[in-house]
Length: 212
Image 1 (tube, one colour):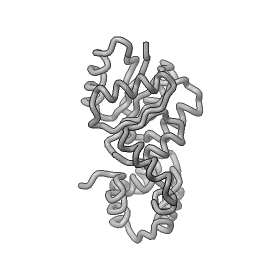
Image 2 (image 1 turned 60 degrees about the vertical axis):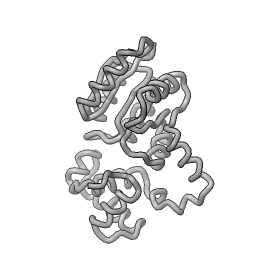
Image 3 (image 1 turned 180 degrees about the vertical axis):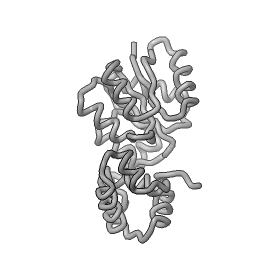
Image 4 (image 1 turned 135 degrees about the horizontal axis):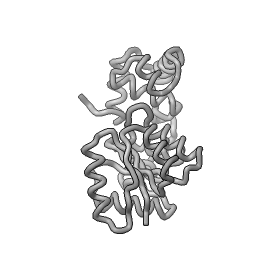
């Protein structure tokens, strides 16, 4: 039996995922959470085999949640579910210790396959993302400006692009406002951007956020 938890900040999505898992005799959902910290707490309490996490959640994104689950050795293998078809996310998450990366909108059968494969100790990445990652491995990493950013800088960039102010970002990432400002300046310098409008356009262009 595969014991798992589900974390997504949209209750409707969580409910749909739970109903899907109920149709599988070898999968049991132990609990669900609406935040990244809630997901980590569930892993501490329930020790699931698989943690199915949304990438973008309030208070802690998929990278941070994955890093905590892995660093604390909570026993769960992490499968990230995201609406963004972006190989940069997948690369960062695999580096953080995730075992899989799958895009929302995939078929239910593919999601179940991914969960089973991850539970077996294997890795599963949505085929289109895996193809992009493979293609990128043959290129000079410097060609993609996202590789210039640290994980934290990427997290700050995404939140700035969404219109969040420094105080909101500091509270979500548990860092000081002055540290957020430091990351902000580094982002501008590294990417050659001039203002927040540039950041938003950049994030849309590279598939980090949805176009409004």
